[in-house]
Image 1 (cartoon, rainbow, N blue to C red):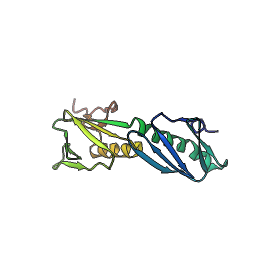
Image 2 (tube, one colour; image 1 turned 135 degrees about the vertical axis):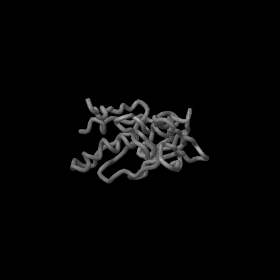
Image 3 (cartoon, rainbow, N blue to C red; image 1 turned 90 degrees about the vertical axis):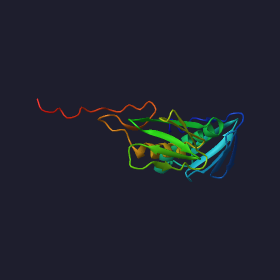
Length: 179
């Protein structure tokens, strides 16, 4: 049995869950999310908790059990509290700004890079070098954070680039030069 998959998902007071076959709809104070679970996975609601179970013991069902439980738990947490991802810019002249809904990055290219966030994700910039992404869907939020970081990933020699908050970049020694 999956260690993660067998754990029940507690439903907070302000969150309502609607189950319709394989479709799960979660509604809370922050918004509403829906997802269709794969066929070998079943979900049931009892005593203010959700239980994710396998229909059979096939390899596919065992692989998906913990994943589906985590996806549903992330939906419940997202509509009740929301998720936040923070990124930092490091480098001389690197800065970020918000124009309308879009994020504009000046990170050493000949042109500013503009990123349009998907619906439901909000972007905030503090002190021109700290980017905060917030939303209720953890998957979409993580993908956007990875897209922003990919514009200029941190490089190992000087450490310049866009990194997640708290991310450690392994530094390399440069050329040793003539002696």
